[in-house]
Length: 121
Length: 108
Image (tube, rainbow over all chains, first blue to last red; front, side, top):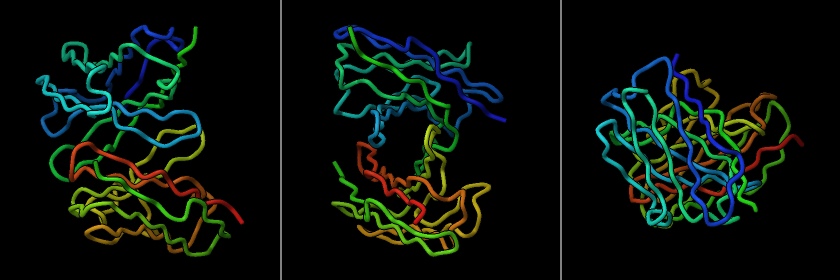
């Protein structure tokens, strides 16, 4: 059974870089049908797609975050990662990673439990 | 960017009742690219419906999706206690992928 698990610091200072990793178990990140995505949810608010990556390294980002986001993949570790630079309090959120079916339709069918990141000095 | 507007914001119903949730898009969305998720407090979203009307694996048949163009609907035919949650629609017919603001289905 495929499982995803987010990991990384729960507290990041303003202006610094948020770094998270998603470890995929029970399946290969190199599966051809899927991208692998990051989504976030500020406290008490809705969902925002951050971006998605294919095992080859091809990426798609939300234009609203594109200038600050880098998503990368490490197939040898079955992991993909998120870096968000120059964070502010507005980046405080629960961050989810998910398997992203990318063949029209587009949907995320397996999610991690999420990790809470707080931006504060 | 396509804006998805969900209504109502909150739906107060009793178990056994029918729930009808609306998702309206600011521009036409291909049905293949309209998805519904369920989220319970403290949990990750769960895929319910993709292709506007196809149930995901393991989703009970009391959940159904319909619609096309700019108007889509999620229907729960008879609410079970475990169905009280927040429901989000999502589109990716046009970049970026966007979500609606959610409909909270609460126990009356």
